[in-house]
Image (cartoon, rainbow, N blue to C red; front, side, top):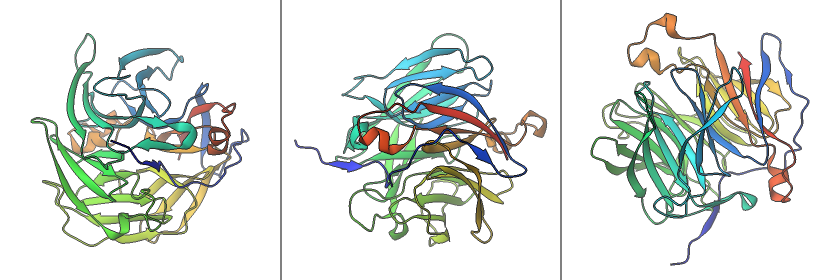
Length: 334
């Protein structure tokens, strides 16, 4: 069966820069650089180590940010298909359990093959090697999987950017359901580039739409993720919105966009660039997960308000077939 290719994200040709600057009150420091790597997403373990999801490899690595040491967690290459990219990693329970989406992709086209997604559960609890469980394939023949976020201890919500909607995955059965599509999540150009990144806070699902240049929220049922409200646009006119993070008080979103990290006020949609000159930022995650507040950790267990921000080195170099600017992970104090 012929597969249709579709863009991973809407992009402009970003001139990647190593001249990173920060706004007053913020600071950044380089954690690690990677040659010929597109970091699509990342997660942070309870022990503080980083798990980058790379669109250029289906090998899940772990990075110790203190000394740069790395180790292989698991090799998904070809597992259950022709997976060569990890498009998603999401913290499921705040205790070393992660959901992974692998796909078959061609990063030099910024594209993945529809329906090649496989969803896995990676259990790093306890000692010994990671325990790997295959959950879902597809979920259907047209799906392009991207962002994901835990709804509760049992259910994870996953983006299908081609359908412009949300799937749920039950990690205990496993089982999946197509919860909803929404006009605010659809690609107005019909090129399969709808909703991209999501975060869940209580009964609110925050999401971006790269093709529309928007950031929005929508009410969901916190028990099952079903839609119970209409979408509200928080801000629009974003150039290249990608993955983002929400602070624990739900006052601000920290957004990777173009070559900047934006701080967006959730009350009125106004925003400022707090970091500029990032070479193709793709995602932002807290250095310690705010899931601790949901799952019963004490306030003292949360580190300072810092983010790990990952980059892909700039989209133009990948399209030209000459990725010479290194991808990187930065630590940004906000």
